[in-house]
Image (tube, rainbow, N blue to C red; front, side, top):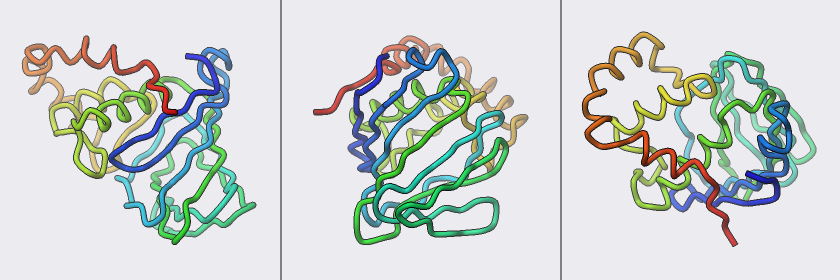
Length: 187
């Protein structure tokens, strides 16, 4: 995937423009600009096991939950999320919010974001952009080095994954998800 393409999640309204993608960065940096629609919902609390994220608010304001603390960052403010820090972010304001978003190392984040966006745009998620449980479990296992839900332990995910494994094979998730990892360019 090359830089300077954009995806739009029709379920959540989030727009992500990829500035430096995995191929451009040689796995050192994934750089994006993201737009959060006004009055967006708080996504599930999550963390990244080994990735560091740096955000700079370019327009509007962004509400961020880190561990148990909630803070609103305004235009011009920058913040960092270290590996393992449980967090979520959304736009609780009246205007759209734009942020610069950098991830070190990128791992499979670009593919994960493309996959979730493609699923949402094909109507395979709820209005919050979350796929049905079996598909979500498959994705959480596939992208476990990049993204983990705070409320689901690694052991629980492994047990659930094994339980659902025959279903994953029957539904051919591996081949279906492989085609969704590529970019879906928005105009």
